[in-house]
Image (cartoon, rainbow, N blue to C red; front, side, top):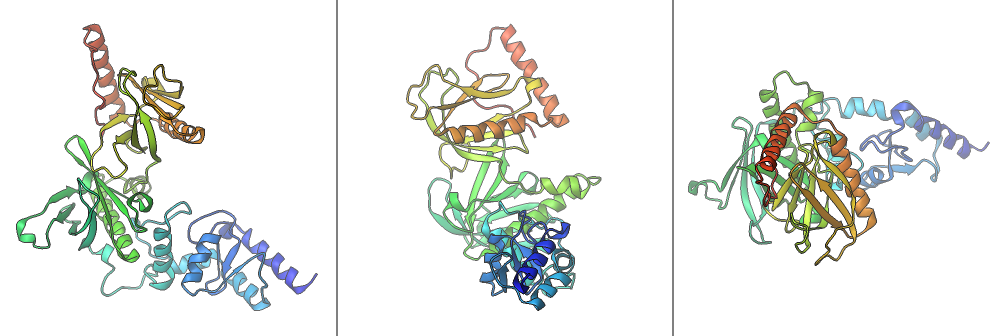
Length: 399
């Protein structure tokens, strides 16, 4: 066996160890690259980010490895690196997965190895997302137009609010003071048309309000994201003092289970089909629909319960197809009515069916269950009194 083959065999044995079986940075399975500067095993995507930071990376299978580099990898590995570079990651700090947008993965890697933010050493000045207060300028899309304008945002953990101003002069008062209680933040670069685009969602009375923002600096937008997560974490710890981190951390912010365009008809299923943008929020069991993918407010929202409570999802062929251009049907049945949607392709239809069934199969929280029972009682009363009529497209908000 040649020296090259022997070193390759040793590296393959190292990467099969339990601590090295996933990428050190994003958790992707079966990493086949490595940083011989840091001694970590990486996936292809994260290796590219490391290379852009002038880190030294090689392919485990394709590149030649010198004996001393193999020994270095052998004496280090993912567990050793994580013990050093992830020693003090705050519980609220978002650890990106391989499916996350590149801005999150890149800034996570830079924060760990370049800025050394999580080694446990005291930072001065303190890291912005750890102070409980953050302010700065973000580019924000107008509510009624597509123009992005600079707006000042102020995040206060003490008051559990995110405030923004239409003008830099704060004396005129804020445009909105947003409670952290129902706030969510998620990256949406494709929809917003900027690699650092972020969607902020919150409740206004019975409606959902979306803000679309970005910053030209990737570090700045990710700092905003983690500052929001820090404030949300503080709120959840206050609202649920006995909740464990395992219970609370998944509730800080969330990515949506499925998004995309479908065609939708009305409650009588004879109305013309219209193209709508849909968002499935699995945590709140809600399917939102909008006229466009950057709308500030939804047109309607459908609560997705469980089959035992009168909800179901299945393929369908609509009785009337007036105005529709797509042919792959999805029907969502609730205690109040049937919703018929059309997808452009069978692959999209399967994805929507799988996502909706995933929500259907999850047990409902006690508050959702009790509210659903109340809705069922209302529907039965309407039927008994002959008051079915035209049922509103909005389901009762469950929160």
